[in-house]
Length: 249
Figure 1 (tube, rainbow, N blue to C red):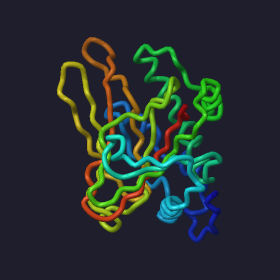
Figure 2: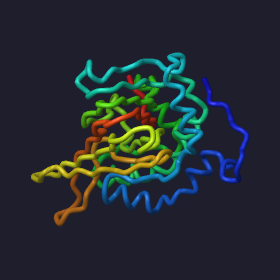
Figure 3: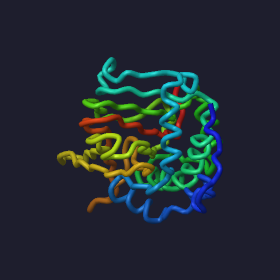
Figure 4: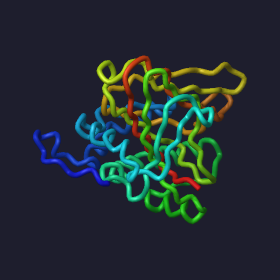
């Protein structure tokens, strides 16, 4: 089920998602990703767009599978993977973000001594995934109730992994839910883990490292390992859209 295009009611709403993505301060975003392993993309989606995506959750026709986290030791809560074709807004957002992130990903791989490079277009990267048997779509919609949480993890689905992903908060903190902060941890060699709590408003996104990223040390560049999760929901219901750029086996 595609999300229908809405009739614009304000000048800002006439901007399509690709134009909105292009207008972000990508130099600042790249700098924050380099320094912290994550960056906030402010007001990526409108409140109306957030509500429209969250409203898709009850209709299984939109999805290929449902995961109940407690059955797998992932935490508490549940999520569903979208099926192809993706809803229009998600289908447009994924390549628009990738177009700006692939250069950062290539630079990271170069810094870490990894030979893999990513093409400029997302469809070309998906072709690489599909030829390797990774053909199942990975964008997902997560739903948390009071008491739910997501354990620290990495979203690795096969040989081909794009090193950055994006999560978009669809619910409004303080109104729809309390608690439920996005958490990122980073493990550097021979050091204690560092935690980063990312404050998000409705429609904000966080771009973050999927697995590892380069850090410049006194003796050169080294890799640090990252995991992400969501702290316990104190009250209400929280929906999040996960935008992963590689597909799964």
